[in-house]
Image: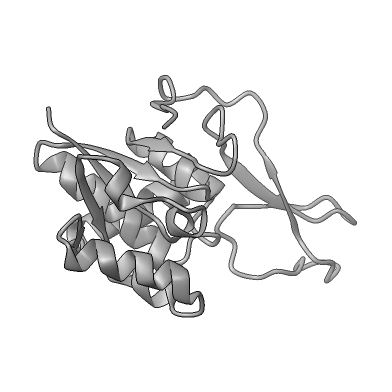
Length: 181
């Protein structure tokens, strides 16, 4: 199976060099939008695109929906940006087309959802996650529990700011498919 890389914005911030690896590389268009503030990073990105080392591709709505459902299932949906969801959906779509995608990202929520979806990932500046995490939200004052995708940031009973914590003793859905680059 052909291996390809799907690059998140954090890959470019961490200094990923598209010319240092000789395999296919993809990114959704939103990655470029997040790079505008950093001119050297943006220059590296555009050079990779212009030299055809990096392919810009938008994922289909079908795969965005699957990512949304999976991220809600583990409790990371409200932490993922639109760009994060695009990166995950693109990797999932590439996987469905018969290639072996590996996401390059230091974002723990991306890594967690990638694990849930059975997609490999590698981090450049952090250790990355070690196991799948499922999250819940709770009120630290009155201890009322909420689902991870609860829309408000405040407790409906006492108004205290909600916190988030992993659910204990959750069985992981298989091994984390993680490799280091």
